Image (cartoon, rainbow over all chains, first blue to last red; front, top):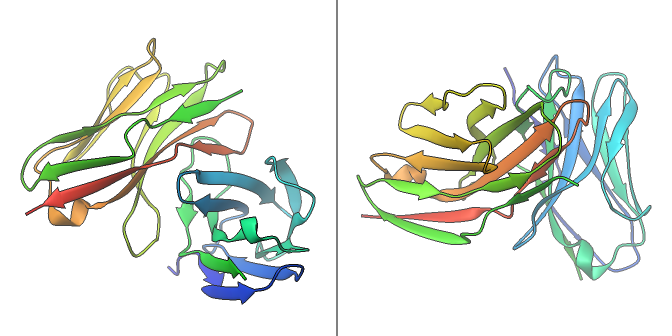
Length: 114
Length: 114
């Protein structure tokens, strides 16, 4: 069974640009969560989607948005990029996103803002 | 608010020795799960072990075990017979019923010395 796939692995952008990251969950998984990982901050929760609906959202500005498609694939968009957005963005999937189910993570997308 | 605190940014252990990583958490919910995840240098986060709050018995997975002290809101990870492959970042995480959201600690970097 293929794992969680995130594309691209690396991205370099400049301030003010926008970026879209993609995540394909494990087959059969309908819940997709996104996290921002920075040194010293750990993983910060961005949002969670299930059946194309956002069920929870973290404390990030509106520049961060996401969506989920009918095949459970998810995209995350960041507009008007800032230097502080440089981070590893992780996607995780689970069957239904309930609290007793562990999440399966992708390798992440490393976003660098110049 | 729910929080997870890992107070040890870095730990070292000699190969074949035992090491304990600390984690404290705070939640007002009674129904929750706690997790330990491992992130090797290759980046993909892997589930190590999980503990349901209602279970008094500490979870074990081979060389990995937890010391779950519910009243103290403490959830430490013990790694026995440490191996070079155990070197990684270890994250403690909390999730509660109905939130569809994981709260992660800032992580502990474990170094295994040969």
